[in-house]
Amino acid sequence: MGSEGINHSKFGDLFAFILYICAIKFPDLKLSTFGGCQMEKRGTRAAAPDIVVYVGDNIPSWQDGQSRFINLDQWRSPDLVGEISDTTLAIYLDQKKKIYAALGIAEYWVIDVRADRIFAFRLDESGAYQQCETSHVFQNLAIALLEQTMQMLSTKTNTEAAIWFSQQLK
Image 1 (cartoon, rainbow, N blue to C red):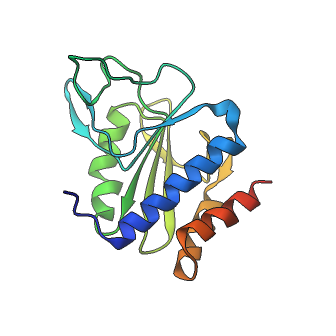
Image 2: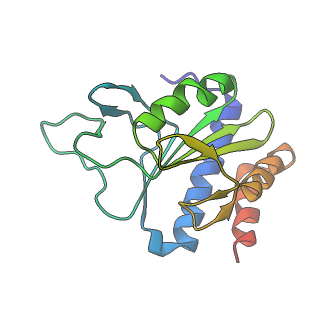
């Protein structure tokens, strides 16, 4: 059984809604999500991010007799992973950030539910993350818009916030 609390769950569902909305608004992206699925690669620590997004083709699929997890020796790295932080912000901004960079994940989000902010990082040519203000996976979507959507959760439901987000993408 999971041990995540109300905030983690509420924000996690909001971001699932946001991914669904992005899939509708940007159908050419051809999004596939694997939230919470463990990723493994020989010589690197395994990780199971809250959000895993692939864009386009060549996405992992399970075959009988294979590992249940995403084998990054067999499949390409996701285009985006995200962690929802209620109590583990320092770990996500340090240890997990290093793991995801080593796994070659192009974009990494740390969603800080306590401060309604997102630390968004893009992997540079040297293999290090640099903070960014827009998502490159979601066609220059402003991280500030995602933060505004998060802030609505203090007075609205996560579905109301998602509907508002959808209206901003017109």
